[in-house]
Length: 195
Length: 245
Image (cartoon, rainbow over all chains, first blue to last red; front, side):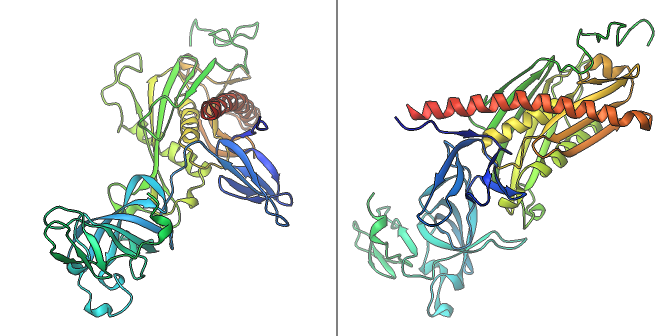
């Protein structure tokens, strides 16, 4: 039988900073690690280093897209300057509510940025892997980039409505009509393909 | 007040409590499935529901977003049937707007808002039955709902009122004692760190008595804390054992 887990509540003092480092669900006050969530105490110790003290809950608490995070999003509208997307996943964690993001034309690919055209890279309804490059300013929302080989369109449907197969880094083909459509295709890393 | 004795010679109040005694507190967490967090609390005959949504993307005008922390958006409302006389509008009147601001201030002090920049946390509080100490019950309910939602907080926020009648500080006033028009203090406390999140006083009170009234309110807040703590621990325990099976 597993040892009984210790439940903690917000404000509860867990240990001093000398005994452990503050992980998720905790904060530091006056040299002590305190809980900020109600949940179970978890200590993960790596050899040599201080154990990391964190508080975990049953349901993963709401994540926010952070700079550098790889997100999965759905294109909802495009124009000549940018594509608007809804962020659905951060890494492999689904979001409870979607966030809006923008992929600007110059962030679509790394080379020949001035020759990029948005409608040759994305279409509404595409599922895109992108990286968060900025949280945006007052007017704009999350700014995303697909300027990496591993980033870009992963799922797209042709005009005939069939799911297309990638044939190069910039083209996808419809299995039904054999017509080719232009996309900024992602080279999906093998570790993400186990579904 | 003629004829009505708020504190008897034996030291009992109108509802039979001692001066420093609280009303019966009953609370439940997680009463709604669709909200991120929810709670219901009864303090005597005051009954309050609170729900929390978020943190999520800014709703409404995006210009209100704060670039370094989350915006705490509160709404306090009283059900039309909550008072003796039927209310016209449940929220948006002067009293409710003031209460909304107080709740917002209280929870901005307690929630670790800097973890969620440019997002919004919504706290909706509704009073179902008003019998004095509405602010206090609202704060306590919202605390439980926030914990249920898994929003990181520095500490619990516990609130209680205190009054001063016949040279005695009284804790946790009910409607009759509030309506008598004596001095009244509402205090929201972060009990672990003994920090005051909000302090409000109505009517006049001699400076010499202020300390003992605040002392009574702090004592009442700490008593509330032990009750809330028990509720939260039971809830966490329940959830973890359900998960373990």
